[in-house]
Length: 152
Image 1 (tube, rainbow, N blue to C red):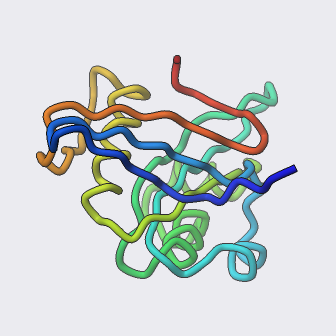
Image 2 (image 1 turned 180 degrees about the vertical axis):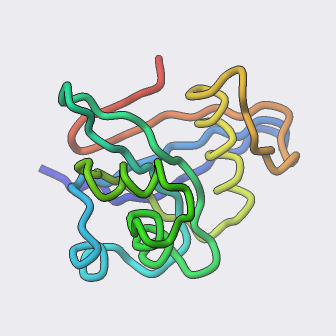
Image 3 (image 1 turned 180 degrees about the horizontal axis):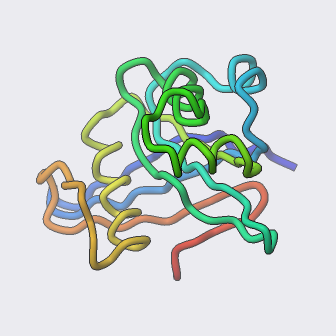
């Protein structure tokens, strides 16, 4: 059996089309102490989820972590005292949180992948832009726990 490394890989076709393969870590219960010891302090992207009363996962955030890296950005994202939004603070304090991440040392690749995910998750409210380097962007996801949110 082989281990999936949580990285973003890219192939480019004639400098027009980018084909990304996004390999996630397994979905993990968020705890600031576990994040400190298990998440690397390098650039990447992550998804953060909360579990509702019906035991369903709900997407809370999908974003890139450039400055400070994944470890500090994830710790900050799960810290209820880092936000002034009282509803978000209550959610962070009371709901089980889960995260997964992938690594990349290319800022352009990170914004392309996050843009692609946002267009799939929030098709009518995409608030991020891609790098403008490619005419078309394609994405394939891999995850050891086989949890995928985008339609194939």
